[in-house]
Length: 380
Ligand SMILES: Nc1ncnc2c1ncn2[C@@H]1O[C@H](COP(=O)(O)OP(=O)(O)OP(=O)(O)O)[C@@H](O)[C@H]1O
Ligand SMILES: [Mg+2]
Image (cartoon, rainbow, N blue to C red; front, side):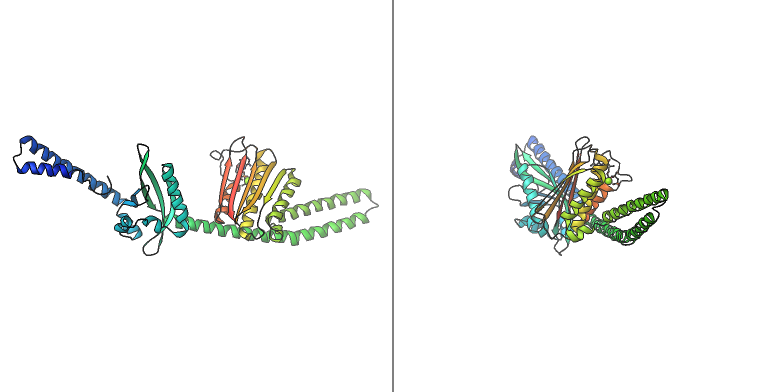
């Protein structure tokens, strides 16, 4: 119904008009009147349909599947992007030319794939308006197939700029909260390490001396010995806690060394068996990315130990053309993300928020009795 008005009715009407000029019969007059009414009804329906389409808070478009050329675009396009409709229709690659340069490759590739597969697809991208503004769209595209052949594509572009702005500020705010939390952890870790641990060490030395001086009184000496051992245990727990809170190794020795240390610590502490494989990890990783990947690995491995029931996991860290791929997996109990309640649980949520705030992507795949796999892709 969209597009240029129907034209197939014209020759019939002209034919009817010629007949009318000679000597129309009653039957011919009826047919003529009927054709006129039908055409008026079609025009009215088309006008209503166009009014409806133009009143939508969205741009409706049609394009030739092969050439990409826009054959119809609703009037709303003018107020949203500022270009006249004629420009959409006359410039051969208007849509492609006005995509945001950072989104062009992805959007065009996605559109091409959808035309090849003759399927519905949806994508989000930015276009540059006539006054230079960036406008975000959610474009829902349908392939029109007739007799197995792709005829054209029809799409609805909804302006989602406001939603993207809100999402952007939420991500920024999350990033700031994560940074503040890391800063606080660093402060507590330093305090535990430099102050509490030193004082506990002094206490342990004092108790050792006391233990030696009380050698003659066996019961007394053994009691002091117990207190000394207890103090040493507390000191090593505080030491471990300070390292978990802030992995100093990460800053000084880098991501691979810090992850190795984490696997060793968890093996010692819980008897876990974790395979760590790494390949082509660049030495220059931004502090933010390194900390994000370390925290994801830390939480995912803790979850493996706490929930999988197998205490055996695998961690892979691979660098590939500036992107780091981290994958933590186990073949344990798994879980159903639909039924696991997020209430009071922070691990998985904080992993997702961290990765999003660092500009990466994360996938959490798990099925009951089929294990769990967490994959992260992040720029180094
Ligand atoms: N590797 C895993 N194997 C089996 N179940 C898992 C695994 N990882 C997560 N889960 C399930 O998902 C739930 C949510 O995990 P999440 O890390 O968010 O919370 P938590 O570990 O229970 O608590 P928190 O991390 O806040 O201390 C867990 O309670 C558990 O049921
Ligand atoms: Mg957890």
